[in-house]
Every structure is written in C-alpha cells, then in structure tokens.
Picture 1 (spheres, rainbow, N blue to C red):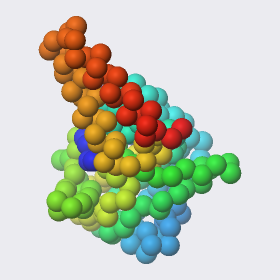
Picture 2: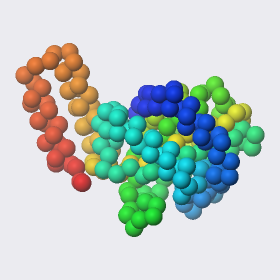
Picture 3: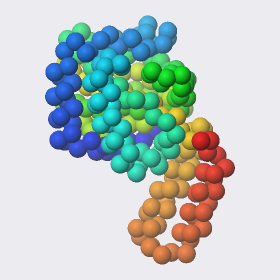
Picture 4: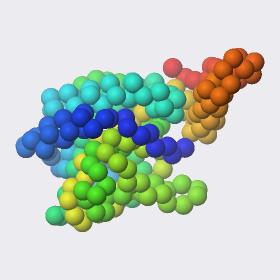
Length: 230
C-alpha cells in the first residue's frame, strides 16, 4: 500500500527544521555512509550524520509529529520506528539515488536491537517548486509511481518496493526518511486493516451510533489480534 499523509508538519515547524538543516555545515556527510552494498553503488546525496546531536534532536521532532498523526498510526501500525534521518539532493551536481530495494533489517544506532523494515517513509521538507527533478519513483505491480509532495507531507510505501530518486537538476531537495517495523508484517493485511479502519471512521462521522459500528470495530480488532506480532 502506498499512501500520502498530508501536513504531518506545519509550516512553522518546517521553517524551524529547515533553518537548522541549512545551518548544519559540517554535519552533512556523504549519504553512502548508511547505504548497503547495493545502495552505495547508486547513491549520490548528502545526509546529516546519523550519530550527530542534530540528527537525534530533529529526528525526535519528526517522531513527535508521527505520534500525533492518526492516519500514520492507522496505515503503518508501528511497532518500532527507525530514528528519522535527513538528506539533501543538490541540483548543482545532479544528485540522485538509483533504483534499489531498502535493506530488510537495520541495527538501531547504539544498540544491539534490530528492526525489520516493513514500511519506508519520506517526509518532504522542500516545496516542489524549489527544485527540478528529485521525484521519488516507486514501482509496484501497477507500474511506476512518481511522488513529489508539498513540504510537510509524508509518503508511506512498502519497503519491498523497487524505488529511486531521480536526479535533481535545479535547486535542492530536503527530506527526512525512515523505516517502520509494523505490528502487521504483511502489506496486504495492513491495507485491509487500513481500509476497514477508514470505513469505521467514515461511518462514525456519517451515522454516529449506527448498530454496525460495534460489529465492524470488533472485526477490526479481532483481525489485528490475529495478525499482529508485538
């Protein structure tokens, strides 16, 4: 399931994050530092050093916003979230990230804890008109989908997907990215639960007190109980 979640961050929070990132100076490092063998061969971008205080601080801001997003919780059903990272693609050197699949397991920094990457996420921090190129292209059974969202919007997609970031030819593309280990490992099951949850939300809004709500809510939680691994 691929899903756009609008306005995860508001305009003021984006301004603060961008000001901090643009003043980061030496905190920006070669993005290949966190790429696996396959990704390193096709990755050309900059990234805030993962072990820096700035990365941890700004990542915490993003995590706080995610916790306040019911749509993110419903779609991802997070068990654990990898600490958000921050990248930059500059048009002056045509930075890009060629076709790749994200690594299946990542080690949480500073721990011996491993996280399974079920869901990939990109939170856009630059407005689309600020740069040319830089589309996130995600491939699935229905073809290739280009994504270039307003600043503050998030896209979720299965980490199993082949995807890329096309070359930036003008301006700069700033984003935060991370992975989610979901309580429900199977993407099709997560999609069914999300559709059911959204139907319950609409029915609650349009027909509050409807007798079917109890039954549908029970079905949702029983399916989640059946499929969830915590």
